[in-house]
Image (cartoon, rainbow, N blue to C red; front, side, top):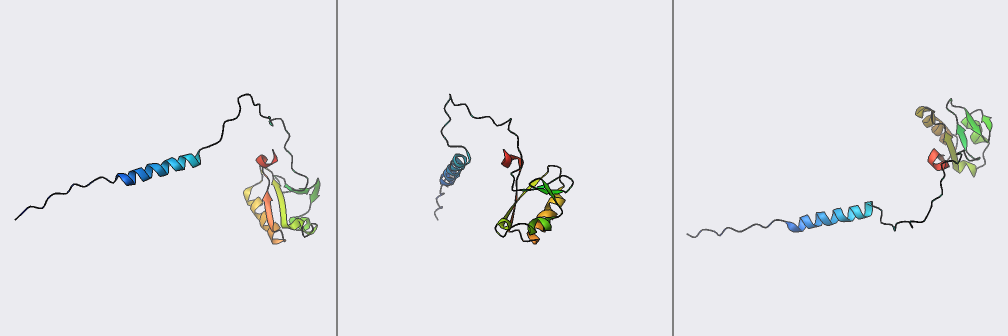
Length: 128
């Protein structure tokens, strides 16, 4: 009776190479692959700009008051009723930083219920 020859098992190096390659691709995509800016380039500074709401937005103050172009609105329904069919497609809303989230969610639901197709929130970063 002959003894079966022991076969040597090789380590799966192909799988390891594939993982390393995928990690390389991930970090290339996740990182910035852009040319660096010229060293003598000075970028514009916007720190001193005053951020203010665009004139065609509904502003919601911290106490829940609504204003549009400087005039106080009695309710979201009255605001939407004064809009044309084209303006109802996309309503821009600028909430105060101190406005409770629950009030903001309720207001957006009310605007959608009154016929607004989309309600866009304008934030501080969007104003600058």
